[in-house]
Length: 288
DNA sequence: CCAACTACCTGTTAGC
DNA sequence: TGCTAACAGGTAGTTG
Image (cartoon, rainbow, N blue to C red; front, side, top):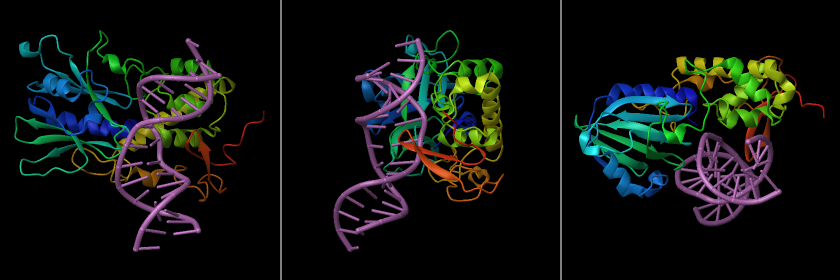
């Protein structure tokens, strides 16, 4: 699943490939991809066709392209926001390349290539959105900053987390106080910090929450440095390459294998209709 | 306002 | 072999 390091890898690939390119024509192949767009596929095609990409930006797992000023599109939203969901990909296709069943949106570029948005499980989406005064699209403004943001404030984030009684893993996944963390890196961060996922954040206090945030930041930086993506054909960069970080995961997907710190067997538990992985010794259950 | 729950979706794998 | 169930899980909307 694309989380912060994977989405940042995609952003970098996109920035290199499409900055300054004009979208000659947009075609929505699957209406679900534009389900959040007022006016649906037709509106999305009309609002994006002919525009020139000025920059590619990101907050948490949300990506957006800004567009160059264009009198033909005066009054149109300024940003194309995309979320990859579970399985979304941006891929560049050479002029003689084909298409496939998972392509949801495609853009013919002015260099002859085609940019495609592929998404097997269709949780991803694209949307034209206004840029607010802060430079963040309206549809992204509800999430917190991510740890790669130069303006990210770890102490303030820890204080915000510690102000909640909710379990720390739920809070990390909520994207509210800190964004970009998904199930994989949440489990990795909690293992590194030695914290049980259900520990109430207020019980951890700002110090404990700060340690979890620091662990999440560290593991995501390492993941970004080692190719940014998990080793999975669903999560590839713009050029189709997979990363190698899955080989470095300590708990996620390691149920039944020994903890790399203490040797106890990693357990997998149900957690709000998904799964949590933890070491029963390093991350013991909290006493009531 | 906060916290918790569920629908959304499809390809793969496990089990009978 | 064929069928069913479980599983992967981020987000938005709803409910309590």
